[in-house]
Image (cartoon, rainbow, N blue to C red; front, top):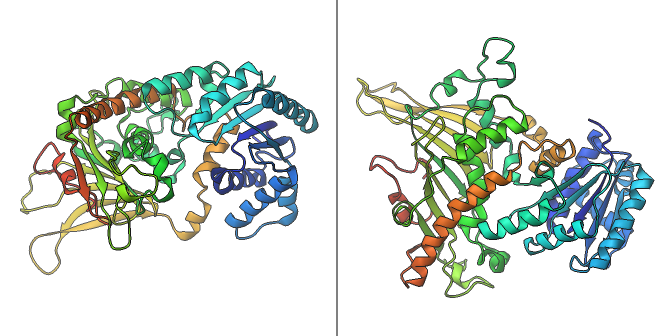
Length: 496
C-alpha cells in the first residue's frame, strides 16, 4: 500500500513518547510512501502550542534520531502536522477537535479515515474513548484506535476500559500496542518455530526449521526461561511505579506476549485471525495459580541501595513502607499446546547487572556414553543485540571429555541498521490494518486473570502483616530466592 489517506489524532502530542518514538516512526513511513500526500496529524495536549511550534518539535525529533535528513523532505512532512490545545475532560474541546479533523479531511482528501492514538497517561484513556463516542469524532471511512499500555490496572478496570472503547470501535479496529511485539527477535519466534502454513494446502509441507519444530514439544523441552532485565532503577518514575510494580508493568504485557508466542500451537495460516485463534486456543488452557502456587513458585523483591544509588524505598515519590515489587519471578504452565505441562519460568526487574532481554529454551538431558554433558539450549537474545544461538556439546581437543559450543545466528551491523524500530513496524501495521502483532481482548482478559490471582495472594500476605518480599543488592541478578521456584532440583537459571 502507498499514500494511505487518513487524519491521525494524537492525544499526547507534546509528550515524550510522541517525540522519541512516534514522530520519527511516522517520518520513516512518510519516506517509504506509506503515508504521503493525503494524511494529516493533529497533536493535542493542554499546552498552548501553535501549529508552527509543533512542527518545530517534530523536526527536532527527526534530527535527534536520524543521522542525515533531506531538509526539503522534512519540511514537507512537518507541514502535515497541526496542533490543538485540548483538555480531555472538557466536552466542548472535542467539538473543536471534530471540526478541525473534518477541515483537514477535506483539505487532504483523507476520505473520512480516522486514526486515534492514546499516548497520554492511562487514567485518561476511558475519558477519551467515552468522548470520542458521545461527541461523534469518528469519520465516515475507517476508524481505528491505538491504545498504549497499561490497559487497565486489573481485570475489572480493563473490562471497564474495554467497554468504553468498544462503544466507538469494533474489536478488529482496536490496536492494543505492545512495542515488544515489534522487536526483530520477538518477530523471529514464529518463523523459527513453524512450518510455512501459507503453502500447506497447495503443495507438500515446507518446513522453515524442521530441526527446531521437531523438538518443540514436551518430549524434548525441559523448561523455558524468559528474562527481561533492566539495568536502571525506577528513577523519576517512582510515583507511577509504586502503583504498578514489576508484575503489572512487565509480566502482564511484555512477558505474556512472549510466552504466548513460545507456547501457542501452529496457526492454520499466517492471517491475523488464524494467529489470534491459535493464541486464544492456548490461553484457554492457561493454569491460573492458587495461593499455594504463588507461595511456592513466585518471588517478589525490592532492590537495596549502594554507595551511589538509592534503595527502592528511598526513591523520590515512593512510599517508605511500600510493598511494591521491583523484581518478580514466577512460573507459567499450559494444559494444551505443543509444550503442554512444560514449565515456563520468567523473571524481570530493576537494577540487574546489565540490560538484557533473552529467552532460553532448555532441552532435556539424554543418556550418553561420554559422562557429564551440559544441556542443549536454544537462546534468543532480544536486546541489546539480536541473535539466536544453539548451545551444543562437542569433544575436547586436548583431553577427554565434553566441552560446550555455541552455534550462532546474528545480524551484521549492516543488517541491524536496516531493522526498523518497533513503533515504526507496528504503526505500519495499524495503517494497513494488520492486527497480528497486537493484543486481542480475549487474550488480554486471560492475562489479567493470571495477574490478579498472583496480586490477590500477595495482598492477603500484606494484610496479614507478613509479606515475603526479598531484598536484593543492585547490579546482580535479583534475589537469591528466585533460584527456589523451579519444579526440579536439577533446574536452574541458564542466564546467570
